[in-house]
Length: 216
Image (cartoon, rainbow, N blue to C red; front, side, top):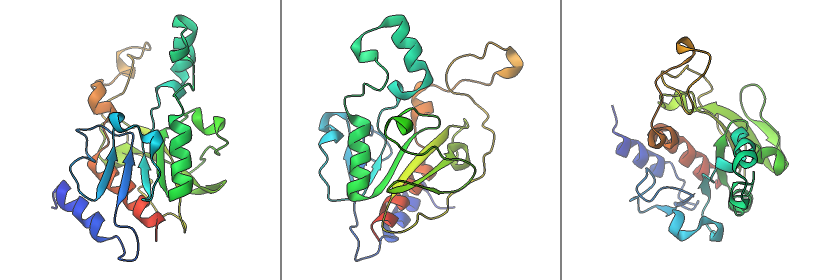
């Protein structure tokens, strides 16, 4: 079985010679799974991915904390402009602009309110569907090895239709977030914040393939 490193090298080898053989990974961790690969231009917090000006296709992971259902609850409870829902300093807008300008893919948690705020259609059913300039879909990261379901929405923009993904939705063995108040039977072991936020290597490779595909 190939190692994760061999899998990522296979992604690089899939890049057609006439296409840019680089991808920009935006809003990623400096010690995360996109780091230390010379053909991946990784933009972590200190580089400020809002300033990305191309020319490579992108994999964008803009911050999601202020776009979820709990953002409104926290804002009502604690107030503060920094807690205002959607007030991410323009990160999502910049990520969407980068995908539309340079091609690639943007990922956010399923049911993110950023989709409606920026006029992106909510994915329905299984598979890709058109939305504005690009395509949208829902995938579960459990299909790529995450221990929780981690339903995820993708927005893709490229020169041609995106390839098929893993559409199965296996039930995760763990959960993300708060303890379910409905009782022990409704709960699973809760993942640490780091593991919950982490991108499975197989899913990283899929996103990189999408970005490279967008440029061909």
